[in-house]
Image 1 (cartoon, rainbow, N blue to C red):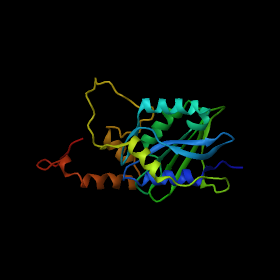
Image 2: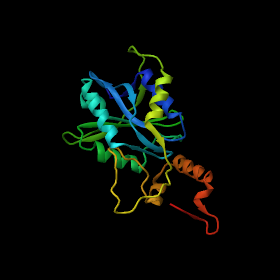
Image 3: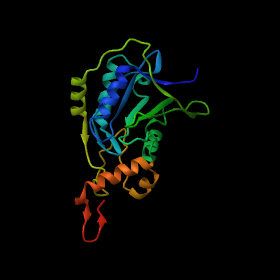
Image 4: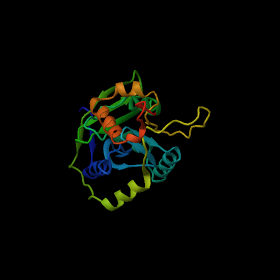
Length: 229
């Protein structure tokens, strides 16, 4: 049987609910069934900075999340192999930064999944494996109603979002070159090679950036018409 990334209705509802809290991306990890590793029982966020084109996880928060999951008796393949995030536009296709992050962070894992849900509920999921000759394959996404599932809990989901997700601007300037980077285990922030990144984006993502720019006139020098990056 071909692999399928399946969500419990509750996990799917939470992912979409958190996606719709703002016009920014949001990311987290899928918690999977120990006997069915491509079945997502829950979607869990960690502390992160987000913008309309980026998600940056906090290193210490990721470490605490991993420790908590181990304390709960879960193995890494249940909580650290499914990287889930959203796109605020209508394209779920991964950006070049998504690709770089997936390769850098999950490239040493025996297997991992990158899954993206866009604003119109379209999805992208890719299973990558690094045993033997390795390889990768696109897999479908489905909501599985065949198993027991819980109800929605908007109150706790709202609290989780407020505690973990901080909006930032994608046009924030980089610090000095010698400034120590307080990096992230999953750093999907927009690189400062902006033009190359912009050209590699899907049309819908480019339009989202242009729309945000139109709403931020203070970023422009009105006399020289130069965009300050």
